[in-house]
Length: 345
Ligand code: ADP
Ligand code: MG
Image 1: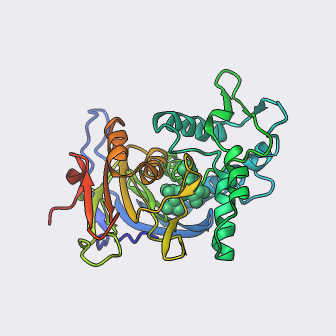
Image 2 (image 1 turned 30 degrees about the horizontal axis):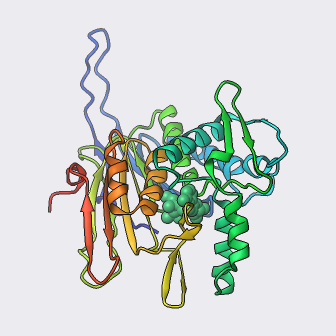
């Protein structure tokens, strides 16, 4: 999990300049910092924001968590009765299944990224994810048969979306969808939107390694977020990013991995080979929204530094840095604008 530290805060008073002549200038409200945390989607979901009263803060936080709980019930492949699980069960039936707005948004974004990343990002990867999760539990390599069977039913081109009717068709029997590489980012975006609908703009939503920021805290340039470094000797120290109206995701095998025969396997699968990514790397991705940051970070983990950054450069508003240690030597590459987000040393 990513650590993030917020600046020391007390009570802030901001003066709202009265612009409309007919209005009496607003009285400067005292903004108080509030922080809420609840387990959601299997991880701690943390919401931090500034509000005028505790009552408004409680109402906004409750609405945001309710929105995330509803999304989890729709998008989680861990839930037997979620919309995504039910959709997976129609694989091979030939049916075009109507999907609700949120699932549609996520699937449409996922398929777009699959095409842009030449299949590096692929939500049909679940059969392979399952094979490798089992391998991790049993501490033994999967059989070639099992791997081949999972590969046969993986491939985003077998998931057909109809944009006119908002339906999805899983064309091969046995196909299964996994939104683990994109759903947390979407949920973070939606939580931020919910806060905004409650009049709260100075907010940060953090879901493990995925976070999205609205306006900065009063008087600050952005939310101060720590980006971790690679856990190897010689790696540079962790740094801070100032985030406002942007999202940041980290992806890598730093926190979840399988070690077999002295080799480290990530929980991220390269759908093209059917095998987990083995480059020990850490991707920090900044984008305009967290759906993009989360999914693109996963794609970059698969593609590796060179092809990964090329994809980021083709994405408006996105910047990235990749730490990796393919062999002995520590290696960092980043896009030209990444440093703009770093806090001055
Ligand atoms: P985390 O947030 O856990 O660091 P990511 O956001 O990078 O990880 O997503 C990893 C998850 O995405 C995996 O646990 C799996 O559910 C799913 N996944 C694995 N490989 C891919 C892939 N190539 N494309 C899309 N999703 C993937
Ligand atoms: Mg992610």
